Image (cartoon, rainbow, N blue to C red; front, top):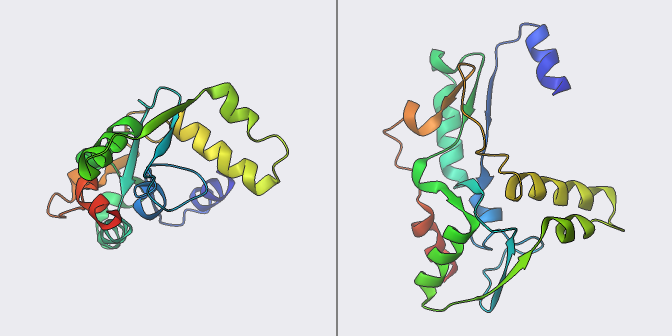
Length: 174
């Protein structure tokens, strides 16, 4: 936030692009920390698994970002990435995967308290990662707000972009 404030105070033109988890880190592993591999037997569910998260393929993120360079509608604004078919709860993503592989995984629920307790003894970098996951999956930090006049939503601004849907993206992990 200090960097953003310094940019704005200096009147440097900007466009911030944010609001999504990279598919390479979030989708294939069904939002599991510490692995990039798709679970085949069991999956950890954060809380009730119903907070929504936006997951975007990195190529799509790049496409949206490049489009902002010459677009005056994004000047001095934040571009939020929320392609509608990729705003999913963890349960929706897991269901998608289970249907795709034809197998029901064992669901292990992790309460808020247990999740936060897992930070005990971690180094600072580990605590930061767990903290980000907490805000995303227990508080809905990527989707629990309306985009105001200071922002734009990428898929509405650029409907011509044929973004990768997560049901298609998961096929590379089968």
